[in-house]
Image (cartoon, rainbow, N blue to C red):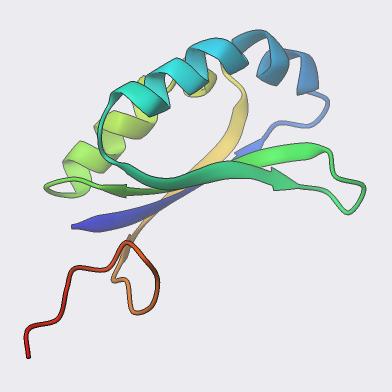
Length: 98
């Protein structure tokens, strides 16, 4: 099952993000469940949060993934939303049977 994780940074927390970025990237790339990920940006292209689309068994697994993120463990986020999602278009979609 797919989930979208939207995590918003606390104000004035860029240093926390940058200090933990290498660990975050290692974590996200090593889990094998991330379909798409990247920072949310301000209008002037500064990071202000994270968006990830992951494929895991259930909401509990998505919450566990989000909680284990080094950004979350460092206290970067003001809030995290986890929402079930179904892909409709895009290269990650399973092949349709004909």
